[in-house]
Image 1 (cartoon, rainbow, N blue to C red):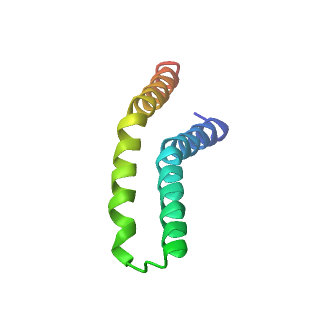
Image 2: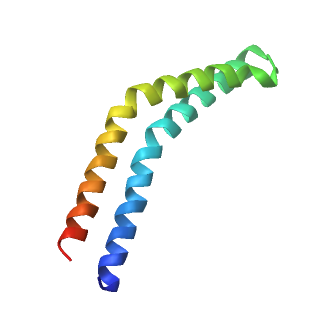
Amino acid sequence: MNGAEVLDVGRDALWLTIQLCLPVLVVGLVVGVAIGLFQALTQIQEQTLIFAPKIIAIFISLLLFLPLMGALLGGFMQNIAARIAGM
């Protein structure tokens, strides 16, 4: 395995990590901004108000996106196994 192939595997791994994390992070960001706007509009300054809705939203998003995440990881593993078998 030469340096270009190692960099290719590393790039694919980083891109996979971004693809796996992005849906959950976006859901957390949207819920956090929505709760922040709600707190700003109603002048409720409770610091713990944001945690429960964000945890619930992230848990639901994990349940929804888990098949996609599994398919992405499975495809990456098949790609890596094919590279190992091709050596």
